Amino acid sequence: MKKIIAGFVILFSSYAQAGSLSCSDEVEVMAVNGVGVEKSESIKLKPGKNMIQIRYVELFDDEYTDSSSWYRSKPAFVSFNVESGDKYFLDVPEYSTLSDAEQFDTDPKIALFNNAGDEKNVKVLSVSELVNALSLSLI
Image 1 (cartoon, rainbow, N blue to C red):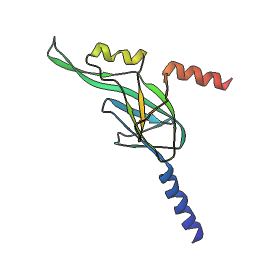
Image 2: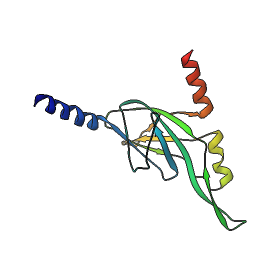
Image 3: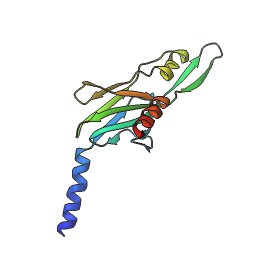
Image 4: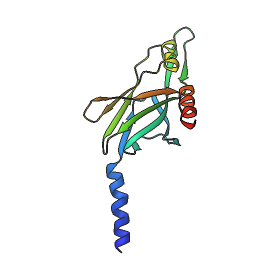
């Protein structure tokens, strides 16, 4: 019986210590710490360093053809430290045109705020930068 109670305490304390992440509508979270995620209002994060894979997704109207088209950026990887129990909000700038949004592929601008509204430091990596960082760490 004591083992069962201890198991519940460990289980629920880990949920209490976990952080969470929500994002603006234009941000699609693809993976958290290398694990794919389903679309969700809030994503659980472990305390300490986390890496999320995101992309910018937006529907833009083409005034010349009177149609709309989706823009989906290349993946970007965002690394940041999570404080136990904190809630975070990830945001990107609003782009008014498709050509403006395409800048996200070469220079992603990402802001991360904690539940107190303070902007947190993030490290943003492209796929090639992530591969280079991983290959250097294996040497």
